[in-house]
Length: 173
Image: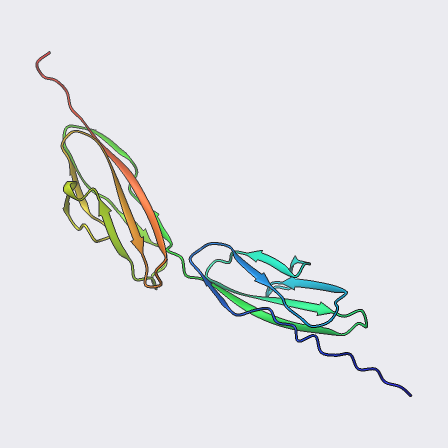
């Protein structure tokens, strides 16, 4: 009786990855020949059948890859992708009002584990809270777009903006 033992594939799904919300490319490496390859998620749903696949999870997800040799031998490996992106929601709608406008802008942190740093601009219109999620701003006349650059503890960035408009009328007409 002759028993043939195939060389191991040494399948490798690659190192765990951390993103700031962008796509992650997962690429499997292996030794030898494969007949088929299948990437799947924790639920078992197929997400790709090539040596690489693009994913973009919400928070963290583990992905699996199985490679099968022409002889029918299989190996499986896994990789975890963690999205560390900033997740905020602008709660203040654009405002158009008559006369000077003093408004508190509100941004909600959707991930309470994130430590956020806010940098609001233009600074000259900010009355208080320039480095918070809820600055108070004042626009005497015209329209001003307030933009915040938001960074979390992982160095991931996002931005939000809102327009505040103060309409003025000429009373000398």
